[in-house]
Amino acid sequence: MANLRSLRDTPVALLQEIERRANVTAGLRDDADDDAWVGISFRMGTETFLVSREEVREVLAWPAHLARVPGSKPWVRGLANVRGQLLPIIDIRQYLGSGVAPATRNTRVLLVSHRDMLSGFMVDEVAGFVRCTASSFQDSTPPPLVRCDRYLVGAYRFSDNLCPVLSFRKIIETPNFIQAAS
Image (cartoon, rainbow, N blue to C red; front, side, top):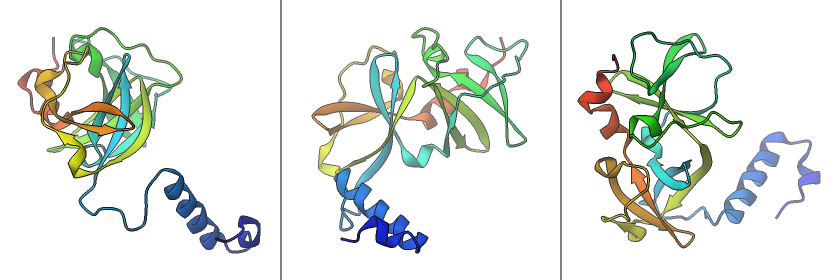
């Protein structure tokens, strides 16, 4: 194990050592299962959910400015300009019929791209990446408080918690989602 101070003149080696230490701290190993499932842990209301890493392109901070979209359903919070591209911001809790999510300093937008449809899903907080083994997967999930049963694709057990996996792809493919006009 290298001393970080001794690596300050070699930035690449320093970053590699920091990453190696972070993986050890998080319980990840270099020889970790290749079939491990990796997802993003996020909170809606008081509940924690997971989404597959493949379904999320990027995690964004809450945008400073949103343009209102006249004639849209109430769960369309507005349009944000993200690096020159207009991104519809969707209040996923409100879409699911579980109340309006407040925008706080912890609020994040999960950028989802599916079938050439780009959307930003507003969530209360993002905890980070989670690596789960295939053996920790369960087909059945405990009933969540947020009304999203039809969009769940199972659950993973990690840190003594059973977290349901929400499929953003299933949400985007729903006819109600595609028809965002009031």
